[in-house]
Length: 185
Image (cartoon, rainbow, N blue to C red; front, side, top):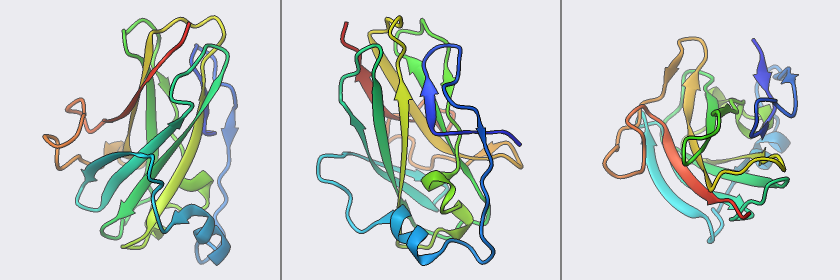
């Protein structure tokens, strides 16, 4: 299996190659769990509320900076509240698309929390923080970027279904729109 590191370039070339995630026997260490979870979601986060399979709520997301300039990178942080234990190790799938449909979609599928805390180790009541960055090449000229996200099981090729479609922005295919980021030119 080939996993992409959590950095994407918005052109036809991926910035970083593949990675191998090694899980220690017995699961995440206490230090890894502390690094991958939060007790409070930052106040300036954009609230979401998407419910995935009745097991996970996408609580909020942040994108910094809130406006991207070609040649710059943006840091994206998402917060997942664990409602029920997950029996599979889902990947977080991220699709970055030009809001106007002029650029090829970029995929950024990755293990949550930089591979420190697979979803099968998430505990009910925890809020798991996931971070990744996107890079917009200097020669790119979209007006805005849409960032879509969800959970995907690579073994079954199935997405964890969005159960509250009427409550959140989505595309009807279990992809949640977490942000539309304007691009300055």
